[in-house]
Image (tube, rainbow, N blue to C red; front, side, top):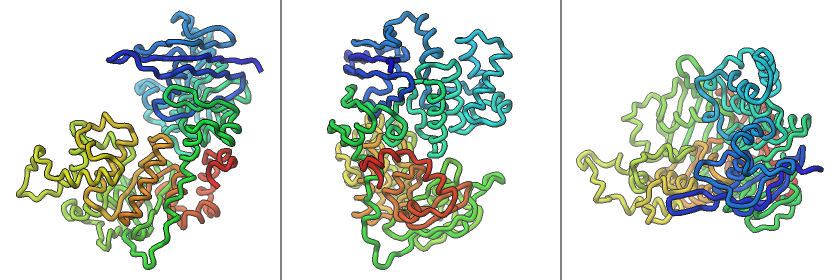
Length: 540
């Protein structure tokens, strides 16, 4: 097989305030026509910088400090800007990670795909339009004339990602750099996007460099796997070989962190006489006539974990908001710790907030940017400060002992109180969010996609922490997620939601091994990582 892309001893530096920071250090690999190389690793490992270096899209403060990048044997890392632009889009193209920021919000979808053809082909306007309509059909759209005229905000996340795929393949490139192309997508949409890339590769011989932190995706889709850590390519080889017999300790650590290997919840013995702490009956929630949650019922027992799973728009997060008093139910009954909450005013619900707390998906966006860690964690305590003590004085740090205890419970050192969230990693921020939820010593914690934005090894740490906290503090969890591998690891009971309704619920193992609803079967069939499971390193 002729090598389409050759990266030899590549090093990339970023100019920072105090000198140079090395982001990629001596990476070497080759990709042949029709092959898929998956570059895996955590945030900051250098995988995205490597992809951008291949494309010539490095940031202004980045420089190729050493090595070479060759396309069809010709060096491209030092091409003049004009030559590089000729290569981009025609021979090498990019599928970026986030369609929300990659698409122009004020231009129609069809026109944005057409830009590629205008820049890189000799097609006239009618030919370009016809080609775009064919591309939209190719990526799975039906009413392509309507899609052509729509704006990005009128499409779902999965649809927007398909638009990026259409733009990437418009000029029929030989090589695609796919940078986390399915990050944040529901499991079924993820499978559709990856199937589309696979189909294009099979039909055209296009090679793919797939940048991902999802080992399940890499195991199912890649011919070769390269593992990056702190800028170095620490392991490289055929996918099956890397998964079956990892040589580097870091690769072994990554494989050990796959969520399906973490089985903390279901290994705990059930309480002898479990007490229901959440009872939901016939819950309904409407927004301006739209039914978001329809006739939902479930019970959660003390010290147990109920996972609510489903795709975006299924109603799972709306259900969480009703449970935590952030939105009112339209109809039905919700009892927390034996108290009916439907119809309660915010004032009447307030005493229950000590007993039920929530951890959001993106901790950083839920923090006040002016606050340090002390302020973030102490905020719930201050909100319960008696009126006669208002305003609470920040300088006294009245609650510092409680804050430090909560941080330590979340596996963070007490001296973090003086740091700002912007100084912390994603995993550390999520621990701070967990500490904030724990500081009032609640009995129930609702976790709304708490690890979906985290790297796999950090996910494992947070999941282990949640399991330990549940065991030590007898916490009850409602775990909202679209990641079925994580759900299988952590839950005792599972409720599957689709279009506002629960279509299946029961014991977690029963739902995963013998699903009865067609939609549950569809979800499970779309889960990435089947090849990984076959290696014995993933789910059984």
